Amino acid sequence: MSHEMIALAMFAAMMALLFSGQRVFGAIGFVAAIAALFLWGDRGGFDIAFSQAIKVMRWYPLLTVPMFVFMGYIMSESGIADDLYKMFHVWMGGIHGGLAIGTIGLMVLISAMNGLSVAGMAIGATIALPELLRRGYDKRMVTGVVQAGSSLGILVPPSVVLVLYAMIARQPVGQLWLAGIVPGLMMAAMFIIYIAVRCKINPSLGPVLSDEERNIPKAEKYRLLLSGLLPLFIFFSMMIPFVNGWTSLVESSAIGAIAAFTAAVVKGRMTWRVFDTSLKNTLGITCMFMWIILAALAFGAVFDGLGAVKAIESLFTERLGLSPWMILILMQLSFIAMGTFLDDTAMLVIVAPLYIPLVGALGFDLIWYGVLYTITTQVAYMTPPFGYNLFLMRAMSPPEITLVDIYRSIIPFVLVMVLALTLVMVFPQIALWLPETVYGK
View 1 (cartoon, rainbow, N blue to C red):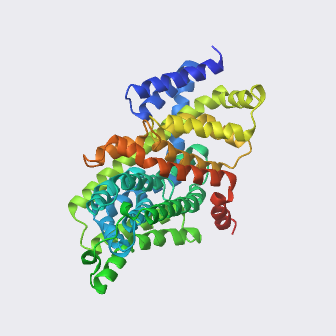
View 2: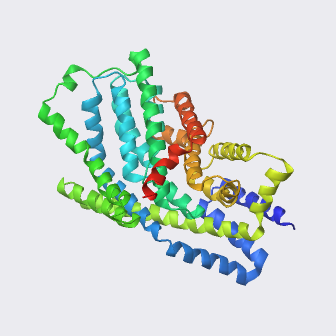
View 3: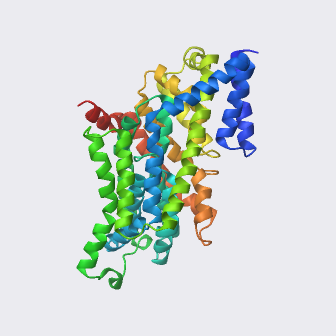
């Protein structure tokens, strides 16, 4: 059997296992192990798995994953996220669409606390969505706001998805995180501009709060402001030393975890339930990512041995005669197609062994491509008919919001995200300026 046929067989077997409901790391790792044993026998097969496991254990930046996930869960479970929304509620409620704009701000800060889109979705659906509906906001608009805002969790640092990409692409996590800041904030600003313009044209979509709700003592307003800015203080307490080179990435993640824990203790919210839940959830997510990374590295090692990357590159550039940009666009479209039935980690693990070396061979910057991948994944999450976030939103939303409402709500936000993706593709410095500035010192 030719190497090309073996590669196709591996992909077919992996997709069959995924469609059967198997866990991502189990399906990918199983196919990689069987292929390695088939190609190189007992010795080669065991050596590949062992060497990749050692590589995972020796990859020091992976320690940031439990630190940042723990920080996010502490701040979420202790109710600090509730303080954030109360702050936006009071300070932004006096303008049309103000609470929807505040929800985007909430999602940005939640992203900076956790690094997972599902955390923003859960908080937005349980805290923001009921409040917005109760105050007469259009249900389709606010449903789109929560979905679009939650997608920022995999782009704004500390993005756990970018940690996984860094491991597979062998790129510095710090540079990837810095590369995600400006595009993430740009996309959030574009969401806010869209909400403000749409509510200006049609004020009934986002009515202002009543005078009774907004007329609270100034002392209470400033207390809420300080409580709401606490997550920002925690974020900057870990990012400023890192950006200035005073601490390493892992040390900064430890500072963030300690700062979040201390804040919960000082505010009197560090109960045993909060600590126990945060610790168990952190352990579960960290173990999941470790297994996924191990499976992805083993799968990639088999592909390297097959020479599949060079074969794919030859197919696109020599046989089909496609330009590098045409190949890149086709890869992004394939991500959107896969996003209809897979989550971000599964998509990355499945195609990373082929796409990432191909992107490098075509002359593109892998840091820049990490941002492109992440934004494309955000779009894929919310693309009908089977976008990952669409069904997650349906499971968390109240009964009056139908699946048709969810589909229609996301269309304008997907268009905004496609515009942001286009801008980053046309102007790579949007993503590369900050890491080049910081690491160029």
